[in-house]
Length: 594
Image 1 (spheres, rainbow, N blue to C red):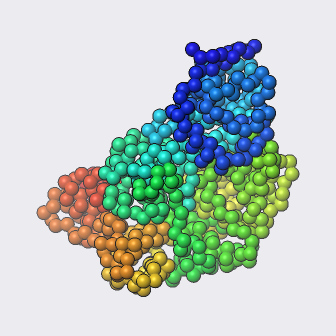
Image 2: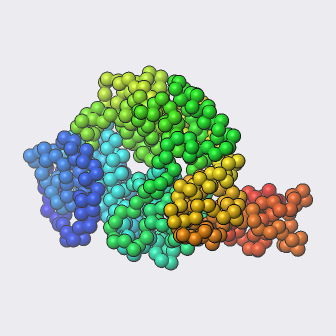
Image 3: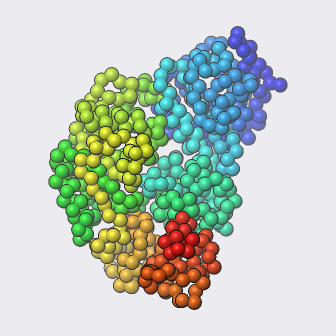
């Protein structure tokens, strides 16, 4: 039994601290690698950040010492137990008991002595998903806590990711992935450690959300539609499309294990990415639909007409917006791009609309301008707007109606002059019907609705491929692609669109070096995608024949040929073709096979 500190309202037990070295890495990672990026929380008056171990015993605290008033010192001594059995209902104990991030308001604390504060806490899991600690922010201010809860979640996730990198970064490849290429450097990205045999040795919680549970010790090829050789041959920090077996379209980057342990996985874009180039010269190469979109967008750019850009992931919506900005009268003013899916829901309002100083626990003492006001005079680009939380949708609608922004916790609104451009890869009308997106906001943002075509439908594919090749080839590489390679690239279905084309081109050029690009320089998954278009039509003697009315040489022929070759095994057929199982089932139903 440890020591105890008696109070009028109860007893705060203090357990004997375990050897410090057991939690040395957790402490060092939190203090040296994570907290410096969240100084705005430490700067807030009368709040503390607490780090406890897996049993709720306090390891250390940071922040304003004024929070610890006389008579409360024992609450924050190293070794104090914040388990519910010792300290009643509190944020740390409840986070341990529930396994979830929690917020405990003043009067929700069981012990009267603890009701001077509000606490937000999130569990910290190790790479094997075992509880190793709890991170907590406590404040004695009567202020909204949603933002603080979001920050605690983010900080705990950052600690988890860094612990995984420290433990596995020296001997395993680290695969970082997310639903959008622009989100890869976010703490909310999935992270896997993969050994040389392709076995998943560790995973963070986001990885489980994107790929499914029970990831540990599974072969990576059972989780994603990519061969192990293609995956491990990816260049460090090169972004590439990744199809999950869960049917999610992801984007990923790989950090190989030949770097020192502890180096953070990065996801930086190639320095010569077309997004860095200005103007529509990098967007349009003769396709009539693209030309029409450009013509319409440039005509309304100088008017107070919002633009909604729709299209599949990877078609180049952000490239289009950057080109539009350069072609508009607002080109000397800022272009502020916001990916609504990349910001934790608890932080969206404060990030977009700003906040007054002292608006909540963790708020900067100076307040925050917010991204909308930063775009004043220029263009505000809201990508993946369909992911915006309902509360933020209501606030955005007010901004568009009143042309002014009211920061969180403020009483004074600020006028803004912005041209709003939004983008989505989801059918917003379906989200309206399901109650996820506001109908009135939809009609506010869709003054001009544009549909960017997927790469497979563009009539200027060949010219675009040549352009991408010119952008990415080195000076010692051939100035043109062989016609046979151009033909293959033009025939490809390109499920990942222009972004996938860029990735394939980068891999092919890296493999070819100073020599002309050949077929074997192309990634395996690229060649698998071509199977439906290139496999020889089936013969009548095959086990399953196509139904009457389907002509020879079709993509269904190719599917049927592979299906028969694998003796009716759908999983092997899907893996061979690089498609999801559901896609194969759908095509087989069209043939009347299943």
